[in-house]
Length: 544
Ligand code: G3H
Image 1: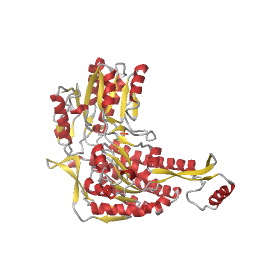
Image 2 (image 1 turned 30 degrees about the vertical axis):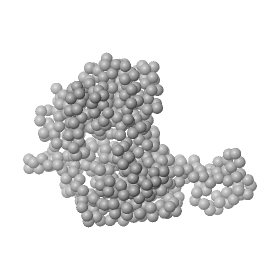
Image 3 (image 1 turned 60 degrees about the vertical axis):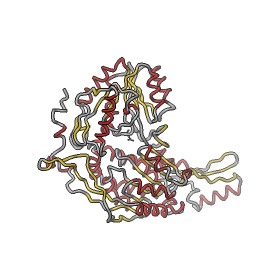
Image 4 (image 1 turned 120 degrees about the vertical axis):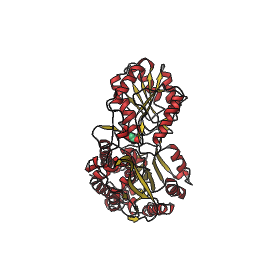
């Protein structure tokens, strides 16, 4: 019996307004009218976009979806003003920001980080209310982002130190440094609205690019507490923050042809639609984190305690709303019953509730229409022969969807191919390892795969079959992005480019070199430039 899902629990899952702990309450809706352009917090007087929480609250017995506030519905006019500000601040590479010394740019980012840390509680509270992320995970997202920024600063110092020397080869002397690319457009996803956006935004800024940043569709109000920190710690026009509908605001930016780097975490369809608007595709560098359908392959000799625990967190943490989540489980037929029994036992222990409640891991879903979409996937799988194998699987109430474990899933079902990005766990029984290999090879996605097993020969064979298919192969562990120093990428429709603390600095820059023939007069001139500090680029200064 599922003790955490008592009868009628879902109907009473949403809290009475007065029962919400005081420090997590959001009493007044936030009517945001500010947006940041050219170092100025402007006030929008036009229409606003309402921001609804996935959380419903009871007031005098009546259940209503919590209204969190509203954000500006800017038009292409304002987004082009933001772009103009970024273009001016870059000034074809001659602007103050792209030519500032590395030390000074780092100082700006350090000051920003200090101010950002002081906004932790506000941002964490909004993360919970806007996207339903648990308190623990919201705090983790905030802290991980701060760590990412300080690691980026360290990595940038290291990069600069390694360039602080002249190299000699084949009669040439040269100094090679990384320089910015231009104007970047940064857009993040709703599931990591802070972390994933900042893992492109901060490297873009620190390398000397100027930025137009459009927050994610949901998880948008949580940027507001940071607006002032952005405004005060960066020169005018270096970072511009716009709000509104994607097609209207971002579409106009891409059509202008003035975006040099497009950093986007979202769907491959969204990325394709935007990329093709740029009139000079060869001038646009893209760094994209897109869809994924990461499989777990559970072999007969897998340590089931470990495999089950990893597959549960892999498929259901943050309700399965992670691009790196395990989205399909391929389980060997010989252990299928045992795996399902243990998996379901584990799912039963996941506590449904509100994000701020202790020990909660299943929470309401922020995307409008998501529970209906998941229901559609479940209905389709059932119509093609799968059944829900866990107790209470697929029960729903308003924005809440209790995890549904489905088996046997096969190639006739949408769930076999489609990225569900939610709490539905498809299980595909297999007999021959070739079936698992074929699944990965034929998939449109290529982010990660997890293999669970102990037989080294068998694991190695699968591993080698996947090295040219996906960006990361996980052995006896769930798929994930971290640690942030590891490369994070994907093949096929899953990504373009590679991110990590150090890779992101490379993505937002290009190597430029000054080279000369290694003769006496050139040597003397280089020595004079360096000794008299006549150039900002050609220098052997070593940042401590
Ligand atoms: O949604 C994609 C995130 O980058 C996943 O990061 O694996 O650390 O949850 P994570």
